[in-house]
Image (cartoon, rainbow, N blue to C red; front, top):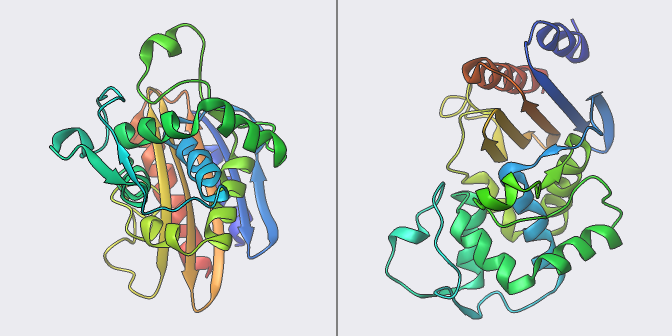
Length: 246
């Protein structure tokens, strides 16, 4: 069976909402609800990173983080005593460790308006930054960060293809329990670069599977699943199908 047929059969039995967008090099090879706008969770960090790298600032410059309130959720920055960090370190923590505090420091450095302006100027119509990470009060008042599978994979591909530095952060991603789950630590013949997102009833992942200079890029976004294990399972199975197709 073909990769498309295998994924069609897999998602047909999935009891939840799912969106997928997949490229083989530069060719779109699979899509499903790819323009559906959903809560971005930590995938919004891709937009923050792209905005910052596009500014061509000195990433070695030091940023004082104490003026940004600490937040819960993923990340280690809040556990450390150091109050000044290089921008490069903050961006690396934001991606490889999905650090919410580091993301909020970068939002304060850039401003939300500048992130949304970059998205608008670069043709992103389904992605927007409306609140800081872990700001549940803003979320409860209808302010939500949004993206789609189409734009999530577009952001990821732009970062992977334009800049060398983020590649090591994606390759050393600490959250590997979704698309790479079924072959991580065992499939030594493939490199998997990825960035996850999760929240209430939300599990996302965007990744590049690279084997012998053959790349497949895929974004899988899931939402409204009452069974999180089922959502993670379908992500892992899609990842496995991509791997076996390389």
